[in-house]
Image (tube, rainbow, N blue to C red; front, top):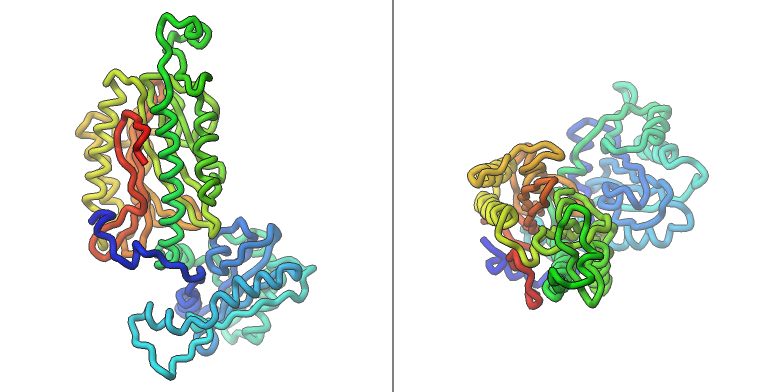
Length: 453
């Protein structure tokens, strides 16, 4: 399945407010026979932002979830100055969603359907004891909501593996036994239609940034060998002088600025994730330095902006201006074939590592090492990873588990030679009921064209 076969509702987008179904968290607490679930962090903690949809502050706050009627109760311990924002983003956004809840469950809406919160998990914000540590406040809420008693001994509290150490200490000092849970990671991996809409929108912005970069490369000029300026630009290793664009040498930093301007014009942040390498630095998976861009060398662009709702895009293309059809052409053909082989395996129920295995096998067939180590020539990373409120999250296409509808993952095979350069091609895809959808199409071709958009 390709992007043109996507369901009409996916193409139309979902403009409903973002909100998280907390029922899987409540169910995890029940299955573990625990008293509560607690997460502690700040606005940079992606688990907490996903669970609460609360976007401020940069100081720690806490979320407590317990089983209760009708399903559960969730308490956000927020700083007092952020109470109004927390009430809006955490509580109000989850209210009055009876139609959405029944629709998602496949049920018919009846006259007696009356869900105050879309997942029947009652939400509230508390700002008392704001001078105490967030972990201490969470412990007090757990104690109050569970009556502070457990006949079998100290109550068990589920926490994400990423909970800060100091918060864990406060919870344990209050008499709780902590147990790590992957319930949040599992929930984050399967995207709702509203999440997919945000991912699609930021991916379209990423593609626009790529189009700008390709146009700049296509407009760049190759300096003639007898040009007097060429001698000044030529390096000691006798490589060709840099390309020129608008009268000045083109560098990875100049190109990065053009990309980031295109992203900003579409309302997304580059978030420091506009990776551009040229020549040998194209073999550096996360290069954000400043190198001259020379003819005949690979220019690898990996653009991963973040949208206003916190969701990322991720797209990679590789270009060569005035190439001679050598290593870079062979690498490009191999990576393009690996990408197709990987996509041919994508469907629900397929083990994620099968996708990686097919990409690696294809690269092997073209003579590239499929299990190269860092700094070695060949394929040095996995074929893909999940994308959401984190740029890298589950599922991994090199890890355990099966692909499921709602998974959003990158497919990004690549080959590298630290002495020559690198080639990588990456798209962001949604696993659907019968295949996949590319969230934002972008053309392929090693030679840059100005009308690619």
